[in-house]
Image (cartoon, rainbow over all chains, first blue to last red; front, side):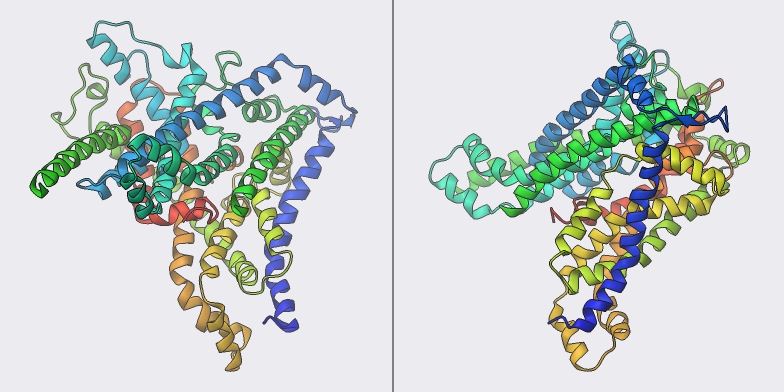
Length: 290
Length: 279
């Protein structure tokens, strides 16, 4: 049993991590909140003045905000759909007996280790480029007009690139979950005459539901902050066609030097992320208790 | 009968194998294509129809990238930032994970959940103040600044990972050591550490990978001097002339070390990134 002595020691030992994380969470966030009520542009230092809610009013009524909000949702939902569906299918495939499973696993997991700037640049230039990309070569070889992915469907192109990066993650987690499935239960169901489809629906899916929740939760956290892929491919354009909330705040604060407006956008992003986080934490909490 | 059954299974196994290898190859293809293109001349890199293996292999691009863009410095920055932030994080996280795992209290679960929640704060929410703090303290474009930020960014994951590993060490062993009169310090150094080494090692590995590929803070807080490979590669987004082969060479060098580390750590990856929820 833990003694009073060890409790004190434990408190001492956990405090550096807790204090650091607390400061990391509270100090910059409080500054963002403060800046969001100021008229503050880096190009005009010393001109800061109280602005009330006007930054929020400008940010929330800016048409770019609604585009960015919609783009963020489309990007996150699109990537989640592709990676979860693809991940389930791939995990089911990789769970079958085969030759060289270890090597296939290694091939499938590789995209996850590729840094975002590399995967974005390789995809946009060497695959999606309308003149020299492999897709353009393939289209021309088949007598079709090459498609300009980034100009014509910028958001879809970014969604595909990000999905390629995250598919291995979903696959690996779902495969791990599949491998912990009770074989005897499966065999018993098969003995009782359950076909492959009903075995999948009534045994595999319920077994996977918890891991699917985990995949959705963790990917959403990371996907809400997708940044580098947009920066090096479209710069949020054409226009604001591929600007997400994260990118919009970046443009406002780092390119237009509008600290006040950027901070207001940052607070809006934090609030939205927290809504998702609460919703998802509750989901994962329920799954943990079950 | 058993003979026929075996035949259908091996036919099925062959089909599954063919399908899985095809899908695996397609997913891996962009990486392979980057690797192959890095050995082409710029002309061959954009040739139609593209050649896959039968071109004049050259290492010219690697030499050019190394000379022209000061590649080794960016590589070194990546090493310092990812390894530095990971080691610092582990140093802070080991005692914290120790107390969460072995001296659990009423609030242990809350503390863990709270740490996880700090990971959910979008980075862009604190971009402005972080930029200003860095500018005013002279940390902008320094390796130590990035080490600090990435330590804080990954600290929750490190604590969680270590916690799930420590949790599996039977507490009785520690109690026995305590009974034998071991001090807290020697309890950690001589009893806990040897058993925890594999867990600590995989935590370190995974976090080096995450820090190496981190591309929000590195792109926003380091422009030149301290820029790691993520930022260096981003400079290829405004190309001049033919650059596919050079981009490929730079990319191959940037991802190769981490790809190799990653393949070794794939088993721990699941556990680390799901905060122990899937093992």
